[in-house]
Image (cartoon, rainbow, N blue to C red; front, side):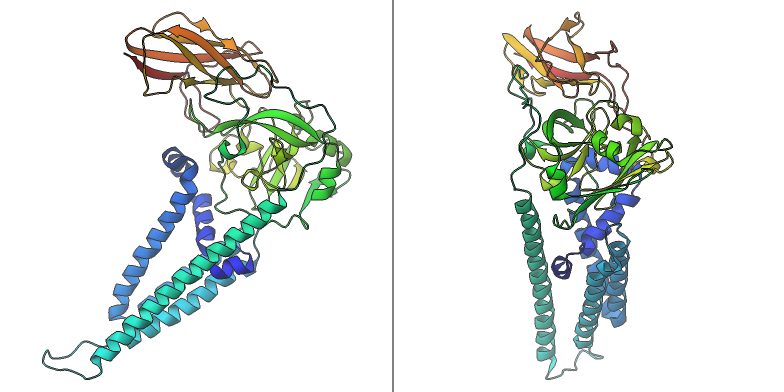
Length: 483
């Protein structure tokens, strides 16, 4: 870990973890997100470390009988780590160096320690004068090795945190002035439980990156290539110098369950993708905007989506600040109306105009090639599990149908009639709308459900569907008790 941090390559643990993420079956990933939520990456790291600890115990026991077994086992782990590191799309063959060096040192130390261990006596009555010294030397050497490993790991973590901190400091530079009027969100917020604009720190993060990509903003480039008349390349400074605009866009993860929290609404600032594509000259044969992240992640969506007026953008800012590292600094794609797995590339490095044939990261893993966001709604007030008083109570939440907009939200309590809710101001079709009704709560157990209708006149379906392969459906329903 220390050598990986110093040499600025992916650590063996993160490399192996990334391979696990890439190769795990879809149901495993879905269960991980369902169980651990946004802590899934931490859970994976802990799992890998636990497996390594158990493997080390097993190798130690095996080495007691065959000294070479421990060295061979450590070497095997080194080979696995080296392969995983070198196999990462954004890494060179040099990324394998920390694993190889660590394996060589670890195997040598293990073999030496085991060889120094005093052999068992042939007969119980035998004794040797140096026995105590040999045992002490073995314990001291083993303890020193463990302490050295812990120290190196700690230093590696410090170096890695400083690297990430340096990137965050680079991202703290002020954004240029807007070239379009600011956004007025007056009247959009009807209740306080869910802010209309999601704070950067509260915005959900679901991606495959176990660690942040190595970013040097001074050398970073965004290229637009493929089926274009003119290949383009932009530095970060050049993108910032282009006309900037702001748009409020709600993003949601396709893994979001009905009523889930993997959704957020933010003010994104950046450059219109359509303007850059016009400058590049998209050829008639191009069917797909295929984007690649600095860590090798890919996704794609139809060219028509980029130019149909929905203001797909290359975002450089979020909620008035430079784009946070965890949300894609230095640049990311924001495409209203599409789930993130086909559009929202973070740490953007390349946009390629291609045919429809290339498949983004998630498509071969069982998710749909096209993924328009489905009309959905959620109850945020009252909270599930809260006991309510038998007085007039608010029922409130959010509804979304990006690129189509929300026309109506209805709420039903028990077997009553559907009641039309009040809506917050219609700021843009690309963001969620808050809704609220008042309910005269009566004692007992109650069921509350909600449904939304978009501006095309289509009401969300009541049919339950899991997130895979193209987004969950169904009415969000909660149960409350009134005392």
